Image (cartoon, rainbow, N blue to C red; front, side, top):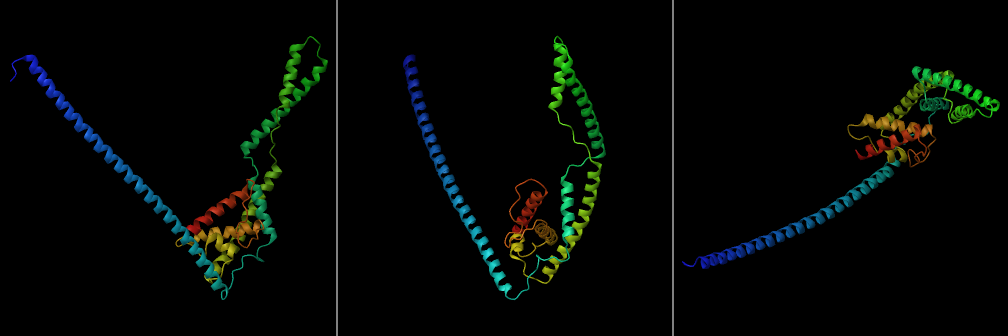
Length: 285
């Protein structure tokens, strides 16, 4: 034991420095080891990610191969059946007349037009009456402009502002009772016609299914070779509307059931998009 207090303190400081240096070395070793572990883990994650990516690509390739094989099997099946199987006819419809199709189209147009409820009609007539009253006042104000004295600047500005305000407005649409009545009748006739036509189409499709007839290529391309398990009624509903769409819009493509998608917004485009989505869902089922 050192008797000199200063020397004893220096010894303690030396030992403390050594302990700190030892501890720092241990911390450095731990940090180095942790960094190596982290790097190793990152490499493993990167390798696993690459393997998963390659696996996903392989699964996608296999799915495409299965899809191509399914299409090939369908084509082979059609060729085999075509030699000995009666074909379903979804092109000629003597039981469906042009008048029925015209009534359906007229009904769809009537539904697409803006209609007024009784309350809306009342408000529209009130707005038209107010517009006409303002128009008469504005015309009177404009005519008065030519008779105002030169010093009546404030009144001239008032009359001109009244006239100018009218020129920036549009006369509201006036409800047409005759058009409303015609549209109501067209909707009713169209609903009746579409129910009759859909029944004819559905009956023929059901008969083709029952007799195991060969469907047209455009039909199978859109809806698949048969109804998905457990969804026969939904499949029949879509198939009926697909045939009706072809009849209404004169689609005669041997491969494309619905033809090109309409560019303009409206009932036809809405129906086309709905049928295309439903057909895709049936093919995936």
